[in-house]
Image (cartoon, rainbow, N blue to C red; front, top):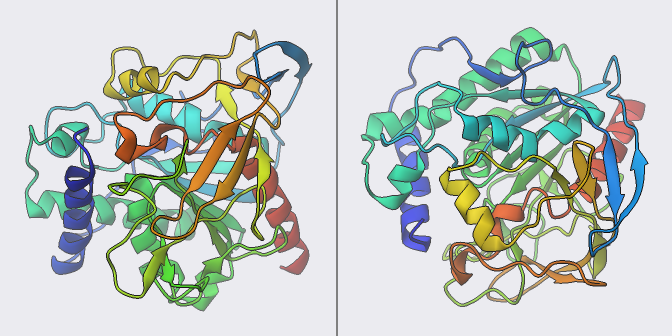
Length: 369
């Protein structure tokens, strides 16, 4: 992972090519996670051990997924594929199973989880050792778009839905929300919220809307629905060459919403992480090692550390979520370098807050729909 120029080139090419080329015929959706699917990486135990910031075991919470969840989640994973080609195929490799566990599975305490496999730009493409064609790159968005349409047609049945993504997944969902949600009032009414992490969601400077989306606003209260939650994580003020939180688009800024304090200010956040190490031997596993993220020493599937960090959104040259460890919590190291910040922990660093937030938003949505 070489840095800013490589990432932005991959993402920009994906979005531009998807706009420029004609849409391909819809294909059968390949599901990574879907209710009732055999060998589903999102179908795991939800039992969780609460830990102190220094890792001391406090108590175990036994959590059961609801038999009939009242809302849905639609998840698009980040760049994780270690396939050597420029774009991945539909094979469910170990890194896909791990990322679904790390970023999506814990939400099944409240929602039905739908996560399509898509032919994403691989890490080899990001590193420059493989070069996808424009047609291949355009297919990235089309795979996700077709899966979304499949979900709406066959599974949604008017239910509320939370969109969630990270990194490449968020870049793709930015386009999906623009084309398939923001412009369509009937679909927009089904949106509980969109959790788009590490994807540089744009708004007009000083505003909560008007960049990527015309109608879907930033979430600024826990009871607001049909809105977007977005941030990228750094352990200190983002450097001048930060990949995330900065934009060169005139009149625009990158959105940062603190999931623990949507209205602004500093608040404490709660990390949740699975006990299982990320797929050993993969590139992302190496990146997590650089970060210095300790695996929870617990017997349950999950370890949760309540209020282990404080978090605030910076303003100015870069808008990002800056975290500070509290009471002996681990200090994370930028990975692979300071320009990336703590990108690899975006989805887990405040997972406790995000789960509680979407649960509350779903309850509000259900009361009004």
